[in-house]
Length: 227
Image (cartoon, rainbow, N blue to C red; front, side):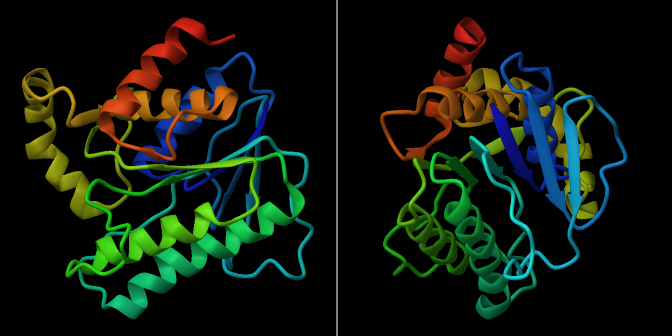
């Protein structure tokens, strides 16, 4: 497979990138972002793009099998217009450009537990995420999957690049280990997200909305069935 990752420097994106580089059937990983990742690997290619909203005048990647869209921001401190521009408009700009040149692509989007598919609820971020999911599902990809992880436990030395999240994980991170044993269906790891995304890129899934229990199941299958 040839895959594209948006947001490979974030916590989730780092986990997805790690699993892609380790997968025997992934021959190329193209990471698109605003700044270099600062790492090298025989499979890794990078495209540094200052403006992730504009694609009209650029040579778009073609012939890719999957895109793992892990780019996102917290809604904290943002009004609905600002959050919509970053969460919905940026995502759709990238996805529409890819769909036009990669009709056989499987697109996976990192959303969140509690996303409002009706787009009518009182929670702003959930409405915006719901609109983003709904619009992505309308695009002419081979398939599209909306990943809604709950609490995420970072493994393999991965850290969030958001300062507030890093501080939060200093205190919350150690609690996620025992909590995962008590509530295994509600907490996923960065490793599981990466494995699950690869699984749906390879073989698809029986539902378009992927919740934490689905991520666990897909990751287990990926471990036992990966090429």
